[in-house]
Length: 319
Image 1 (cartoon, rainbow, N blue to C red):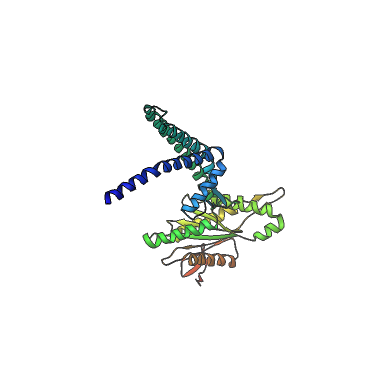
Image 2 (tube, rainbow, N blue to C red):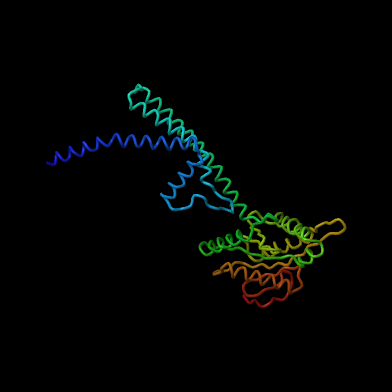
């Protein structure tokens, strides 16, 4: 009885096997034809299949620039379609008995070679897309006017440095400064001159004076910040004082006058248990003390007191 049942199953399988083979041939043929003739339609089909397999969008946004996977599919569609169609046609003719079986090995080698070429070409194109994405990500962390890092990059670096300090020890310092009376520069000389002050008198000087390991950022408006890795407060205080002097020595020259730029600076050292907020708070308090004391000077905050970098009486800290 069981042997009869098994024989029936074999007969059923043998009867539907040609249908399955024909269905696969037709499916592959249709896919190859669509890919060869209409890459756009093929990308739509691929997108639908992709969404069915994994419910995530195929187009993402990085640095406000779309990473279009559809474009990548369309670019390689015709090569893929030609390869699939050639394979389908050959196999169809082969199974019909009209091709000498000895032709099969060379054909398989040809198909394999073409597949490798198409795959390598696709990888090269994909590598180019990855490079573009990395460039966009880098641009998303740069301030367009000054060429310094932006607020987002600064916050991420502070988080990373504080996390590293809590795990491994080591220290770093953080400074904040802004341009004295910058609004008056804009009001008197115009916003274009103000942009020149930000870019050349401040941004360029920072670029030329900071160490390679330092991260300098435009915090917002006329405010800037610098992270000094592997530095104690005394060293960072000397660095910001040199920076303040260098900025004052780089005026913006106009047709009939020049704009001498002065900055007020506050610097502090990262302490155990610091968060980004507490670290910025101390630097900001030191900056406020520099402004209160008359501007065009630097103050340092050691976690307990806030005093002028040059000779001066300490001011009680509130952070």
